[in-house]
Image (cartoon, rainbow, N blue to C red; front, side):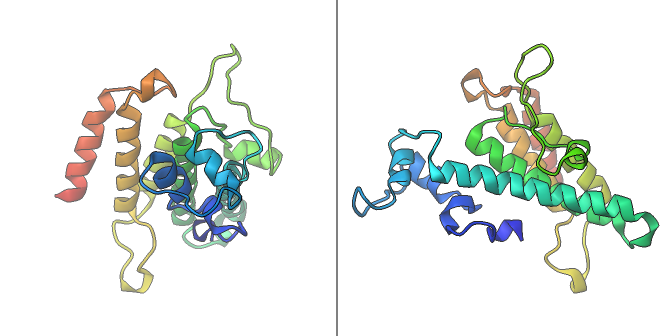
Length: 212
């Protein structure tokens, strides 16, 4: 349900289309109307945002609400143990959803965002997770998202059958990982811990695997 953006009253805020943060911020579209209409979008369009911008706050909340729900699913399944059928596949699907939202956060806010692992969630459902290491250096979520997707690929079937159409499968997880590698390989002006050119080869191999 987090992918349907149901946790936000304003559909633009957490929408996975990223119309505000992509098309308008990138110049492909114009907010239009009057200056008094949706001024927070105008801030994004003119690169004049503040920490109080409702769309940035809403997107942040949408990202971490999605992460929270995925962690909640994994926590419940692990606690249920043998009492639940297909638990490993449920966890694998939840990891795809979690990776999706973390990637959304990375795209809008950069890779130096907090990664809420399952232990942190279990300690506090709304934990305060840092984004610097013990030496004061920034931490990045690339490898966290990568591992979630690798786990999902290993745990998901290639197909679900006609009765389960629409469920995420291992090919979808591979496609998401391929996209992550493409972003990871790009330099981002030397920021965000990106610019690892070796990821191009990994992206290419995954793309070939998916296509052929």
